[in-house]
Length: 462
Image (cartoon, rainbow, N blue to C red; front, side, top):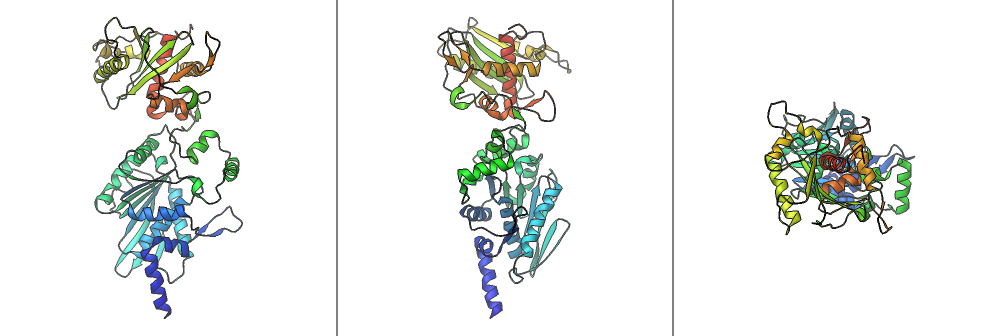
């Protein structure tokens, strides 16, 4: 009779993962006085476990801290490998210590399950847990970040923990794709990461590309997560505004260092629809980049002493001759119905290094532009990065116009998406290297803007 009852419980757990978690899983909280914690029956955790089971590629985004999502991944792995034979589950984390930590969490869960619950025995060693079923073996293996950690395996499920912080996540995801094609799953769980890193940009694309199932989980879904609770957590962790935005609010726009332009920049005051004024000079500023050249179109408004940033563009793996034609087409669209003619009141500034000859002996960047009928110039003086970045920051400061009204020193049209993101915290000072700045894809448009302002304002003589 007892064995029959145990078989009924095992069948119920196998059928419904939320029943298994709610009834039998315990977790550990080393910071609490009573470290042993019963699995909480929270709605968002039940939803996450159900989504884990059903999705082919699932991206869990806005994984605010203290939400038990890493524990959730451990519960799913144990349930899948423990109740089903011949399942292979790999969990990849940022470092070897973090990977081993996930295995330790799973060992804790297993140690606190009733002895009769699993239909198999298990062994754990060297970062791997093996489940010995009657008709096959299942296992869970945790590995550190790396492009080739998964390639030689054919797992049923691959779980990436803290995807946006894994340097080789793009290649690791590609290596895991055969799991999906063979009927398996890929699950990504992460906070957004530092906006200026390639891995964070890739995670952002996984979330926003529209191809994958995305599960947004915010701390407000936790019972008791009141504004007072949030304020207490913020104080305990010592979060700055941008750290809080990234770690708890799920912002993709926070860099890894101290934001350069925020404050004074804020979207409410600095972003508004702008149009081209044919009575004023049109300034086009260019950064040549490496296969990702960028340009910013702006005008100086004499009456208010403001800079209006009208449009921006960043090329995607494009040659300079192609980019030059793109600049011409976008300029025509911006100034319409004004005609694009040699008499157009337009000035173009670029990186002074653009006139240096290539090592390959080919044309310079500036010569490539000249061939398309574009003639950028700039001071022969080298435009120092820190000085010109501070020039942009200086121009952002409020200005008093001729009418004595105070306005933001620069305005940005909503179409300037990358540049606005850079102003809003994505462009930051590198915490490790003095006078170095980073901003991911936004960096090219900031470079173009600082070259444009340096040339327009005659840097060093303004």
